[in-house]
Image 1 (tube, helix red, strand yellow):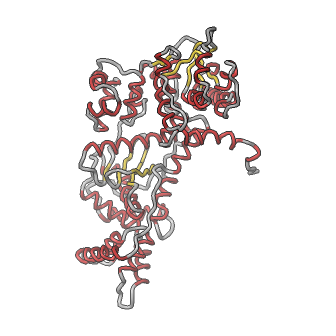
Image 2 (cartoon, chains in turn blue, orange):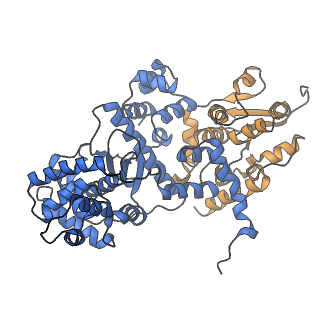
Image 3 (cartoon, each protein chain N blue to C red):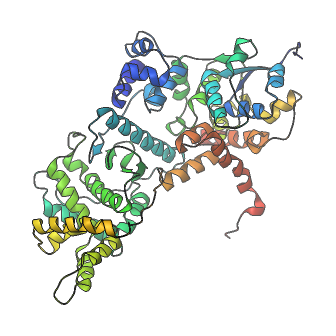
Length: 368
Length: 174
């Protein structure tokens, strides 16, 4: 495919008009149009500028073949199309950079995520979603509190790429043929919300081949979302351990104060609302009753001190460590490192000058 | 005073790292008086933007080009494609576009260009491409130009040799 056609695809994918591309790149509207229509070729510096604003590597425009790209799946896509496309472009760029770091450092790893027993979309119901959650719990998550280890296990054992950015939405997942499974979470979301979002998006990754047979749309169907919620709830709040906690906190009449439930929710790393919905299944609590409890919980929140959250790093630990390793091995240039790590030139330089110091014999540690 | 004699390094391509260092050392004017300097257009922009993050220096190479003191080169995209065709997938994106353009100029020309860089990845690519002798460290250039001084690790000859060697090994083991 010619460069012009790829320029047009890249511009459309990020949702820029020709005018917006002109504003962002400083390259004239007519020139960009001429490049896209094959009337003339951009110089290397112009192509580099356009690649940069379209959040693509230069190889996207120059490689002989471009692999097919999976469509990202949004939990709650923004109403403004440009915001959606820009977020997707940024997410894809990060995933591709991560993949390139794995490639250049020889650390490309793939591990198969557990599979659902059913492969038919039509027969995938709540029972299947819960069975899948139990299977994941059994095979991957040690201990009684799955939220503590879920993210770490997905990143370290299954090489799922998990990023945090500020964007209009809560979570996006993608399973791409080239860079594998990835999740984008909103950096602003509270810890318990992000725990639930990871579990929810994990359902989409595990069932990607079932629900996205022909590529699919960027927004899952209502039924698929309900199944993902049921899966997440079942995964983060395991039946036996949650029941144990609830029953040991109940009084002799079997009542439990909302405050005690809030403590249990905190312990499991989920919101009180998530725990209350889980009780709907555990104790056959009527839906109407759960809704009432949730209203009471919202009132309680205003009189109790807020729960502590944290601010997650945008880039995964493994991504940063691969980038530093690549820089020190001469497998990533300083300018490329600066771009990948989203840091200043001065900060990037700091990682380079330390290299010689680390190599000195007198500060090496013997392991023999 | 303007150097009236023949300059050292008739075809010297500078990467962003050495440009920034020369400005930091405040010897840029003296350096371009003694060496025939060419900079790729993307590198010139990179140096400009990188210097905006530094406190003490501002780099804008265009006035130097306008006065004929240095040359800033842009190239066809096809030149970058021929460079990428010579590299394996794992090498395709290890250098930034400015460095790709610099390397593309070197690979696409019959002139005896020397690339002065302070980057392990650039020297590694040169080693892989069998162009080891066309890479040079800032330490070596300054020494030959009579401006020698103590520099950081990434500007040293040892640094260049280490990473060039790694690229040569990659080529043998490919």
